[in-house]
Image (tube, rainbow, N blue to C red):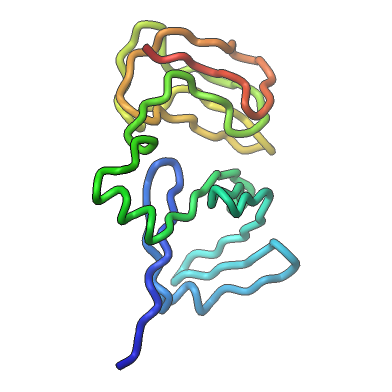
Length: 163
């Protein structure tokens, strides 16, 4: 009896992806330098650079073709805890949205008092010459917008307060 490797589950912008150990792109990837990878999947190519890693939380920041993304590695135990409903932190709604990276606020897509659904674009943040859409992490009402267009922000700065 052979035991197959479990899938790898990652979360990017609140969306989960399951990567099977035998997926075609896993065979077509190569590490060019430490922390820099080139990935080929069918007709698409990606340059991936690992910018930050936190093995304890399972989070890391990567740049995919220059676009910065924070990803979270979801362990099997995390999935089991969610299925049992024991992860209060996953269901907790954040009252403040923080900047995931340093950048320049180039657009604000919402107004104070507006109801937003999960995934609604809130702010466009330019970082490393790429426009990054900062989306609502959950359904909420915008209580306070704490930044302005043209403002430079550091990672971790409060952007929006929800009620």
